[in-house]
Image (tube, rainbow, N blue to C red):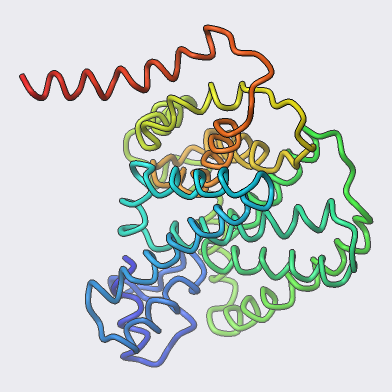
Length: 328
């Protein structure tokens, strides 16, 4: 699915409409295939060239997460967040296999940070708004409306948790909307001229609404609690520590944005409400979970009760039990 459309683009010179299995493939915008096609152009068409951009995006997401946390909570927390994300069980697997989700993870972090800065930070309205809008446009170009929904919803949830109002939302929102809509309008216009109204029906109705809200593309139905179990094993062993780390209340630290918590909670709820559920959809939430865990583990707790120690004991006991039974 990720390897073939870029080959067709290079063969035909048509970079506007991806094709897969002899049909137009409008599951997502073409930015993912453009990146892979560029890799093919430089390195030749091969599995290595197809997977390299995805892996590089994953490394960039790790570095960005570490730098983000370093800015928020210091070097120790930043290094820990990068390590947690690196050694999250399924993050490395998805990074090699699902290019669009790897790119989306990086783009969502960028867009969420830029949008949160535009909502909270004092500074030039035009610059902050344009950066936020451009980052949202990048995320849309990778996977469509979900690239806008995740960072926007996460930032809104963070503001709600902190009971904070956005700084000059009308002015900055106008600049952000301009930076977001201009490239999107150009792409939509080109696609409409090429495919007519069929583009809108295929891209938005079939590949957004029907894919997310109906069972049309879903085999075995999965319930609303599916992602609880999926996150527990895909983020192992950190999923066992997350509750304990989040429960550690800090003393003597400056107030930070609740963006990581807002992004994680909103994303988890958003994906849980969709009918279409896949484990890989959790990938953009792994950096937020790494931030919560790293900041929780490196802060001094105001108090330490026994129930907060339980997840830490479980995290140590489960690998020990696995080694014991494997040795038998």
